[in-house]
Length: 88
Image (tube, rainbow, N blue to C red):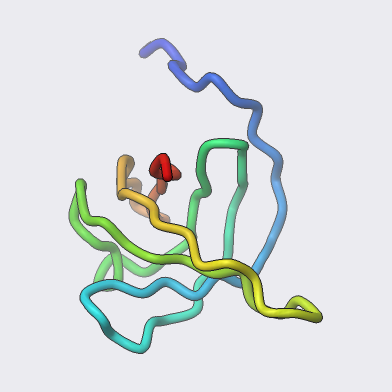
């Protein structure tokens, strides 16, 4: 069994997230869970970016536009992928 190296507690919550990369219009995915340092997005295998890909994400469905955050793909799983928040 591998050691869990996460520093932040994960919270199971479903949010709509717009994922944008390479200047595209983006796709909307749902979260599986979130933490202070990242999110896990549920996705079909054909829409999972490669490890190391830098993407922009924005929470959808809020009363005001959410900020756009820059994140990196750091984990791949059959049901989706994990993103780590990049420092500003």
